[in-house]
Length: 173
Image 1: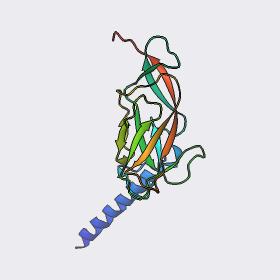
Image 2: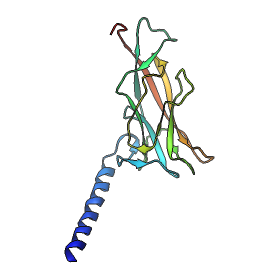
Image 3: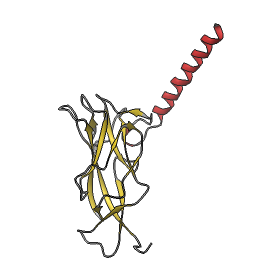
């Protein structure tokens, strides 16, 4: 009986250290690195694009001469995520709140040439690839919105300002 009690206490200590270790390594904007924690009601969060909340860049594949009206597709390997806030956030970060009923965040690119949401995120720290099927501006500023879903009157959208950067692509492969 004594060894079982000791084993359970040891497992509890290991679990506590794992949680503590996850919260010590903070990513940008004071977000905790503990994952995967499901998105749920009553939580404060930040959105991230390619791992950052401030100064995010999205690389867009564009060919030919790029004009202000040029659009292209995001390059592979780029992602969006949400992080649970633990501590303080930079003043320029727009923090979201899941409100009373959210169990996920719908991600929308404000400059996308499509009205459909890009994706939905159901857990904190889960990197979800930006679909290469959407059309984005080749250059310039934009905004990515992380909208709590389902929404409620207490929910607040988190916003991440991004810069779209044209990366030339060879249409011939």
